[in-house]
Image 1 (cartoon, rainbow, N blue to C red):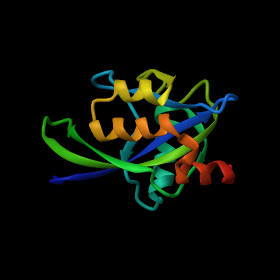
Image 2: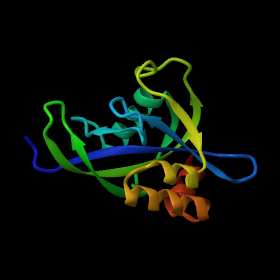
Image 3: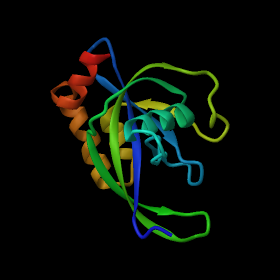
Length: 152
């Protein structure tokens, strides 16, 4: 049993015509609270590719994912057997091109677009809220997001 876990997450984004950013969030399967698509790293996959797979499976999001993390946050993971481990989550930004109508976890989760400020209000993790608030202020000033937009 790991003492501490490392996970990866996608931060699915879209840039609206007015230049404002929105963040795609999903509900967790157990508590129903709003979270980023996230999971454990996958053998043989780069961390950002694993995050891209999580975004597809949990939110039905398809797009361009960055290979540089935009930040990290910590939370406490409750495992199926009731044990608890602290986790650090590395977050990779993703520009969403389309949302699938059918995806792996559609029946288990809801998905919704939020402004970064609204998303920050809905998450429990303080460091994730701070990351989202940074995007709210000047999303295109964030080098990782700016570089991702150029690549997409």
